[in-house]
Length: 87
Image (cartoon, rainbow, N blue to C red; front, top):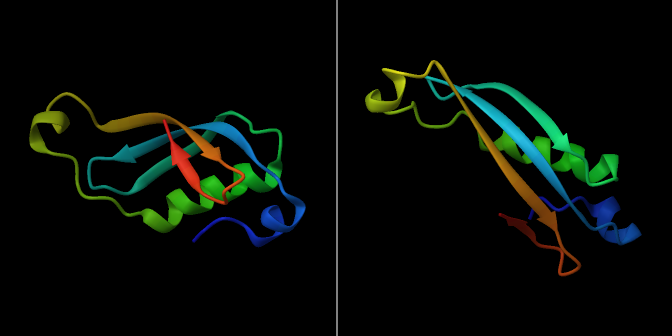
């Protein structure tokens, strides 16, 4: 659904790694491309998808007693089947 139309037309595919930092209230503190796909369009699309998904649910109390900001690092794959997969 959020696969970039330009990437589809140009048949751009690849993997990237994003680190997303989430505040205790569920708002996004930062989004960083830890490892680029080699295509700015795909990197920007992954960041946009995270922004569209926010804000997230507040962090549970058992996490916030030790953590103010939770950083999650995931690998995203934009595949030839025009799907987004996460590892």
